[in-house]
Image (cartoon, rainbow, N blue to C red; front, side, top):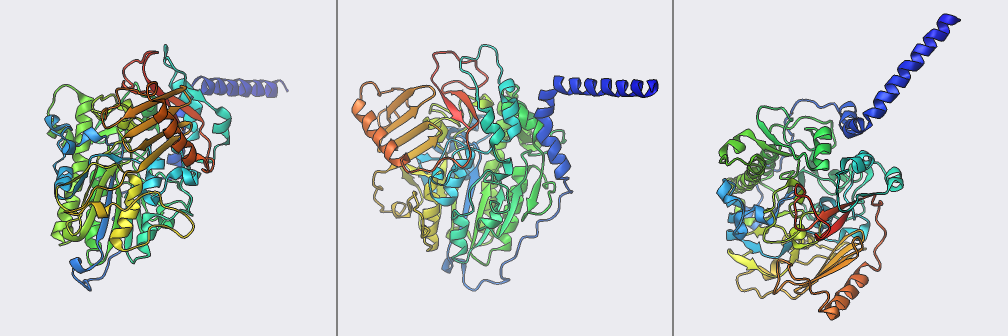
Length: 556
């Protein structure tokens, strides 16, 4: 009996010790939990060839007589000043974007191109459907619950002027991460084009849900090479150069939990075939060649230049060494995106398809302040996660020699919601589903050699209680946290330096009425926000903010 009691006592002490050790290291465990679970649930096979479905061996008609091929290339977190198209960029660092610039020269440059949202998931949902995503409940970006459990501690910076707000009840009640996304009832570009006989393909990031009904194959895509997790290469691979932002809590979370993985048509996970931007491009080239004899739609959704910041060694070495490692990695990543555009266009030329292919290039939102590079959205204020111009103004260019006059520059505002109706019109398809409206407009009538400017229009943005509207040249940003309104006349103040809300109450009242009318009949979000994070408008995250800085909250 004594021996048994002693054994039980030792076992109890061991359990107490394990529990104490676990409690002491609870944040470390939570920070790594998503990655560890991923490793257990999804062992990754070595890279394998993607078995792209092939079109007919010979074309029934020449490319010029067929409906146009359509390619949408979407960069992630690429700021308007990250390309040299608009006269800025990083050319002095060896990161010019000649291939993106060429699309604009040979087609149209939208000087007031906007993303649907200031963050990825709503923006992508709006681009693919032509509808404001809050019409169908997609208002926030899906976030792993583990992030909510550690967010307050990750962001526990001494002297922070504005608190992180965590709704732990909402986090506990949130659906699984994979269940958060765009409902299958929405009609996507792929579904519109499939109805017209197009072969539809997706490569790269999705971030619109990972249940079977939410994945690309059930949203109109015949084939999908799906980014299952977000490393460009394994962290310690010889061919990669990493830049870690220790001042960014989300960056620390990503390094702990992201993996290097892809799948094809919902199959098992496998390792990509190289640096992920280049590998996605390899697969895009293969997909174009396999389908050169039939109309196709390719949605090439790059992960670049989203964090974690990882460059290929070759691109990093091609950049000048000027003593700023982070900037050098970032510029190298931009090089890879531009090279991707160039390789896609060269493949179209090689296959005799470039004259009758509509290519659209844009980004899902402005560049973030949390990478610590202040010039990425210049000359505009704000970052990803904010509704200032820096958060929603994005590179936006298109090329289609058969219909778009070379050298066109459109000054009127356009949005990612315009992609679906424009693409549908190009293909001779019907944009609007029978039971829902499309918010975007077909841009093609204004892109010909003798086209007139489009009529004035109103654009809306929404993130929780943070709302914005642009009507003509007037733009209003309305915030509940902090309780603040900004009003700007973009005709005279395109960089939003002069808040006119106090001197033009008439415009404030008019634009607020537009906001109320637009949002009055919207459904509640499909899932609740459980974290609110302050974002300073004029400082990157590595620079300590002060109580007098302009800021808004990002709801997620």
